[in-house]
Length: 116
View 1: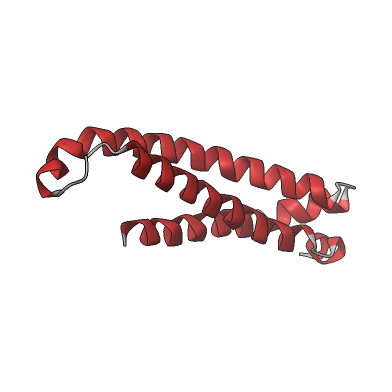
View 2: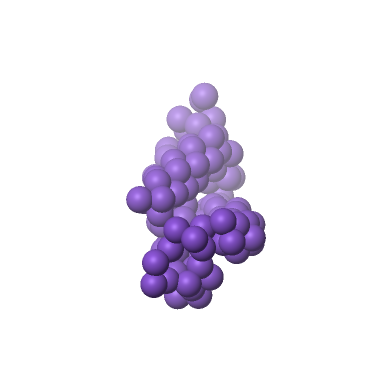
């Protein structure tokens, strides 16, 4: 359940960041940037933000495992498979959450952006 809530929050945050930069993206497209370059820039920045968050979250989770160890049955509190699986899953969600809105934002008509 926590992983699902984290995915929803991550998707919402990254979508909001891309929507907030719609004007900037429109200006870049108006000045001649290719759609693939704009999408690549947005996805790269979204993934960098995500990887910093995942590293901090993993470090915090490992630090708090002593508190959770008593509640776990037949599972190690520092199970590397669980950490790696959640890390990869959240990274995949972040890639999608950066790519989908960036693709929409890069397809904006530059004239509309410049008028706004």
